[in-house]
Amino acid sequence: MCQLSLGDGFCGRNKTEVCCRPENKHYGIPKAPLSYERYVELIDVETYRKTNDLLLAAIIEFTLDEFHWRKIKIKNPENILQIYHAKMGLDHDVLRLLKQCGLTGPEIASLYRQNQVPLLLRCLTPPESGQDDYIAFLENISSDKLLDAGYRFEAYSLLYQLDKQKYLAGYKAFLIKNVNQVSSWSDRCRMNPALLEIGDQECLQIVKQNLLNAPLFEVRTSILDSLKEQGIVAEFLDTIQLLAEGKGKAFRHGLHFGNGPGMNEGDSEYKQVLRRHLSWARQQDNLTKAAQEKIQSSLYSLRIGKPAPKIRPKNSEDSSAGKGSPQET
Image (cartoon, one colour):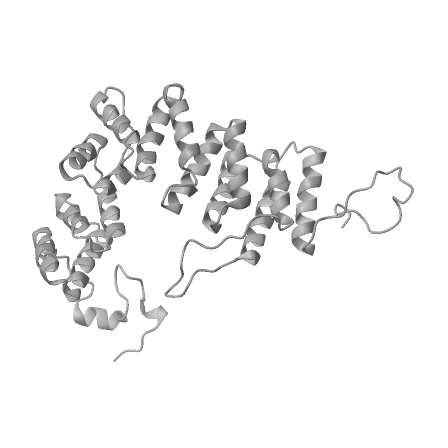
């Protein structure tokens, strides 16, 4: 038996994982894919519903992986949707394959009407001129209060991009109401940037509060990423300074690593994120002197662990005494 080593061709899940190159050749690895029809036969959802057989569940999950990694075209999306109906906990795999199908917006709307699978709404595509029926479908989805706000957001965001003037008022009201109520934190990570894009003072104030007080690390970092993408600096320096001084609320991680619990605080990691963001902000053009001082003060607070000392005016009696300012530091 050959010894496994990275140099012998270890190359990941979609090809080989445990064999070296001579073994691959000996056993004919990678194997040729099965026919599409044979893969569909392996997705025996009816038997799984009757038996809850864990081995059959593993075979179905393996089949979904085969479709994905081998980029096998899904001829009939309903072959995949039956797995969603079986509630096997494979929604992520099903969604990944549905997106891989390359369905048009009207096709997704038709499938949704037939199957009533909300997961399909994650695959919605931007409407085009003349697609009146599809636009009406998006309007119905965006206003359907029986749906989770995350699914409604998928439709509303597309309508807003289609006609910002027409949909602005409703879209803004929807975001303000749901940005902190939507069930999925990944949707919160997308709604805050949407508020930033609208950009009026009411929306900016809500995003500032979420940057300061959101209970999840991922939501806060998504806001910082969006500030970079949209080139927003000065408007959020006061809020970032409060964070640097430790005045934001406690937070936790939304993602759980392995089988253990999520990280409860993440202070050190968050400080690194803030420091990188401030370093980016400091390099932007046309910063006012006040903005530069806020950035320096925030960096000082992150480094020292307490608020920066107040900067004394140059003409004060004790301006030359005591410690230097954060800028000098």
